[in-house]
Length: 180
Image (cartoon, rainbow, N blue to C red; front, side, top):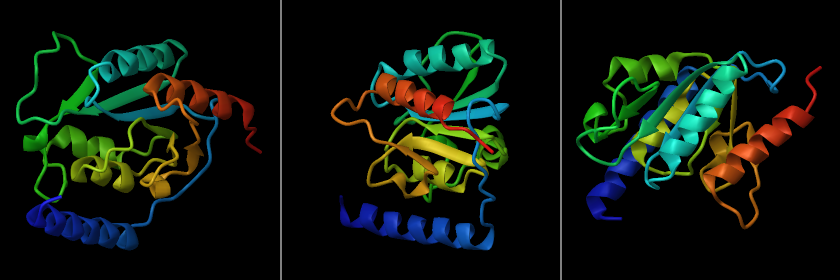
């Protein structure tokens, strides 16, 4: 990481931590039976992530969940994904240098109190961390990693770090765990 990037990262960390301390999130555990609203946050660093998340989002919608998904594209322009997307995509132009979203859709996504938020990446990109950490979601689920301090349910994927395995294991645990 370059010197400038390192300074940006440290300043962004201070901004995130300051916002978290001023407005702490109200945590509440949800499983698949108690959840109604589900958010999905992912990146497109792997070309296969988008179709997998689209299928996951569609499957959840068919089961009656209200689903919103946001995907980060490490670029300055959106590629053409076709028409009628149900997924909100954002690029580096949609956020400030600190990772703070400037797009109304991203701000609303971050403020929405999802019952479950699936974080399907361990990206340490500033904007991704900003959205994941400052999301108002009641319960955050994702892979156990160096960045997993922001999670309420951490999934240990073992040697299979694929997004498919993360989705499968997350759903498995969320269906097994009972909520009182």
